Length: 116
Image (cartoon, rainbow, N blue to C red):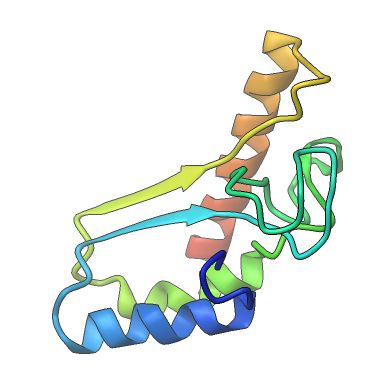
């Protein structure tokens, strides 16, 4: 997403890798076209989902959405590894809150994967 600067085009890379029988792993990670609590626009900060199961742990500016996850499901049949990278703002250092953010974002990813 960062390189393309267009969340909607990530599926192009996924389908190309899948069609070439090269897609064995996929990591979901968010970025934003505008500055936010995590950093500058397009910073490699692993933003949470734009909307999560628990809204306290989302980043509305993020280009990572459950719809984007659902789009890739038809192409991940041969994946051996799926992952999610998320971050939490440095100005909110509470470990339990950070853990709750990871849990909410992981649950959002799993729900999106299962809903197809």
